[in-house]
Image 1 (tube, helix red, strand yellow):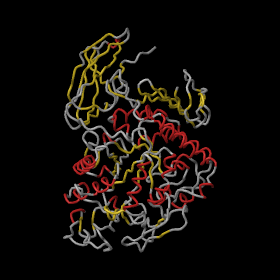
Image 2 (cartoon, one colour):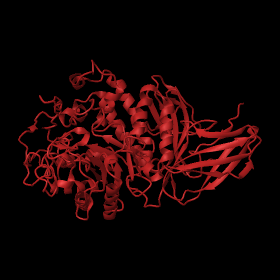
Image 3 (tube, helix red, strand yellow):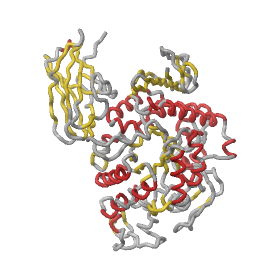
Image 4 (tube, helix red, strand yellow):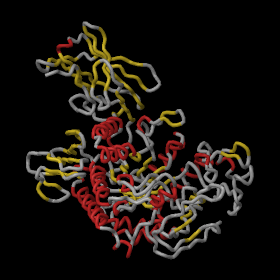
Length: 622
């Protein structure tokens, strides 16, 4: 048997006593096993804080642990929070050898990348109320129409109020190439209240609402007034009632904080003069003039991705930051009403100083409030505008949206690549603090991505143009739905919190915006769901019950990789002596996989017989 020259992986407690990110000024132990045949004279740790010079430490504790390996160990700590990168070197008769890591974080003799070590300062633990729960994301206009449209806000003469609930949202551009997003189907806050029982049946414990503040568009990311509920959705009283009713069912409310930009049709910018205010566009003497960044007043200003309807805010403006995060600011108003957390839109465009102020205000009002940032990459080492972000090393975010898991769950289901999924999960576990990991907002789809059923299914016809994508439907609904079940099982059992985008649980279809923002088919339409879609809804409810009954393991339990193979991904979640095993099969044929000890499949509630059906997963517990 060919021995590996060196054994080290920071995901294994036998090699690194603290899994994941470490707390500054707290000791942890590093242990390397080196084959005796390589006759090591010395072993050194080389560690570099991001942007600083390398520091070297000798591993002097040497033990002959067996006939094959020496073990070298070092008790170590970092004294300041931040991002560190490290590797080892081994010197023997043949010289000094670089020891780095491969994609799985296992040690490689003579080559490889450096490992990442994230260090955070002592801070309050992230809130526990979301751990083990389920989030549900709603685009309010498309969820449920309980009637009573108010439509009284400023500048609504160009909107289209539709009476054909469930039909295709308007997607065609105007003659000048603009997508107006000005058609409204009528979903509102009272509609959400009426469906709280349905949400409870899914096991939902947190409701994430896309923007609900006054705005011109149907998506509301072009805020018109942060201090008012959009009249299309209802009143402040309606919102207070939603918070109260949801709380009684054990559901907390998380709002979308869109502070990176406002609408041009807003009380603050007032480009069209529709508000009774002097907006920044109208006068340099406006009280909001320093809220925006003009290159040439008034028509040339910085906007998000060059879209002139959503001008960038100036987060360095004291007036703006105080308005958002001051004692009597936007955050304070809605949290004091009972909001339990915020999802910060495009958080990588919010400067650290502004984000610090937001985090301070959120936690000063309620230390148990949750602050989640929208990040599409590994947030621990994110660089934005040439600046390394410190979301987790200081007192900023509790967690982030988890696009890395999403991308590789989809990749596994569609291609069977279990190695990439395992490497991604391992990297996130290694790089994130444990509280951040346990509060990750895990997703399969959002308002920014194609529907998961469409992503995993083959569609009829071409999909090259927007017209093609508007008409596209999944060909084999049965097969695509089965793949969604497999993806959803991973979503519900990997570390973090599953966040279900409204309608994914009944197989809504659609490519990118606005096709992914169709109305939820309620009432008589629900009865018309095809059999696979009805089964999918039952499946999501079953997953919700599994999480509720197994929070002792799924809330904070350790992830342990058991096996990766073509189309096979096997792992466990373990807490103390409690253990759950998940076997995922991304093949179109059943998988025979033996597990000793008498386990029950929590999905079927039947004894596990050793077989996993095609495009399925089993969740096993003794």
